[in-house]
Length: 397
Image (tube, rainbow, N blue to C red; front, side, top):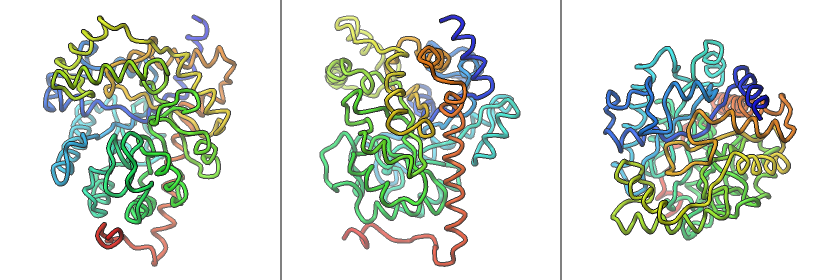
């Protein structure tokens, strides 16, 4: 394994990881209310966070989609304002650490950052509640650098069903379809993590650009609604998109599903949100874990998903989306952003080639964003394809 780990680090030096989802901005909001002096990520933050710059360097990260997530109990204009604050803190980080981070808006920017030895920093909004049913707000977020939007988070929104809520829309409503079309027109990737299988299928029917699953794994390997069914994975070659396997134990290890449900109930019993990763939240989680040892995922668990996703979708349509700082627990060997070489070493042990791994870590994600940009240019060149000012009331009644 030592030889494979050394080779993994060599591969990542040439083809670093594009990670589809990291919740550091929300962690900074929750822990220190964006006081980044108190969480200087140029120094070791392992006592508080999964993420800092030294560990990103050790992990071979070359590009990061920073999630500008806000919880779904923030609604309406409050959700919009909170998302703006999330976008702002990513900008603060890029400005504060220019030797390590480079703002990236395009695939060319990602390649330029790699050539400079910096980490391309992109943003992705997690949940359509962030736009408050406003296509103008969607466009404003794109102007501010947001390059994907996850259509839902854990709860339904008026125009799309979530994977972890009771179906209401039956997938996408007419307004939801208009959101997808406007995302295609602007060049914002449609992210289908968190959405119901019906929403996935509707979005793939409507979109004219490749989609992304920023942090989802294979339902056939772990039957959790947050994962991707095989029939949807099989649609990715025709669409051109990429499914980025996540590391969250409850989504990748069947034995962890029931344990996590009990841990979530324990958090609620203590008056805490299940996704609370503040110091207080983690103390409750660790106490529960001590009393009820959790099933432990490993890098091999993630590799099992990637093996299956490659078999169904093909090597050109898979990637990595760890969800660091958005989960209380992580797999052994993938404890934080320094862990990616362990996953690559595991895949090398399984016979993955260097060219396959280059596609997984870097090439597929960059190609997908570039293709979305190409679609947007074509749509914007068509005088009939103007910005949509449709409202949910007009389209859905």
